[in-house]
Amino acid sequence: MIVADTNLIVAFTLPHPMSATAEQVRRKDGIWYAPSIWLSEWRNVALRYVRKRLVGLSDVEEALSLAKEAVPRERTLQVDDLLALRVAARTGCSSYDGEFVALAELLDVQFVTWDHDVLRRVPIRAISPDAFASVPD
Image 1 (cartoon, rainbow, N blue to C red):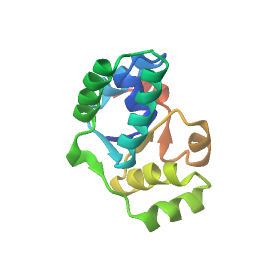
Image 2: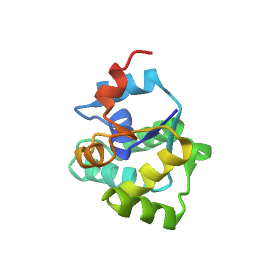
Image 3: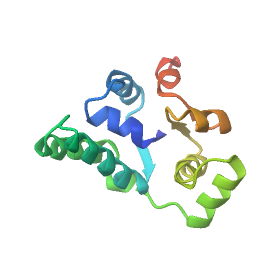
C-alpha cells in the first residue's frame, strides 16, 4: 500500500518517459491511495497532452478509466484542510504536496513521488519510484 503522486499515476496511464518505472511500482505494490486532488491534477495533465496532440481525447478517456482503476474511489480520500496546511508548514512543501504527505502519514505508508523537493524535505515518508521499485520484497 502506497500513496501515489499524481505524476506517478500519469506515467502509469499516459505515454510518459517514466511509464516503465510506474509499471514496476504498480507490479511491486498495486494498492494505491491518493488525496482527492489527484484527479483534478491528472485531468489538467491529460488536457495538456490533448492540446499538444500527444494523445487524442479517446485515449484520455481510456487512460482515465485505467487511472480510476489504479486509484479507485474508495482509495481516493479527502484530506482535512488544516492537517494538509499543518503538514505543508512543518515540511516546507506546497499545500498540494502537503495533502499527499499528510495522507501518507495518516496511512503510515510511503509517498511515491518524483518530486525532488518533497524527497528532500520528507525523506522518512517520501521515496522515488525508482528506489521504491528496486527495494527487495
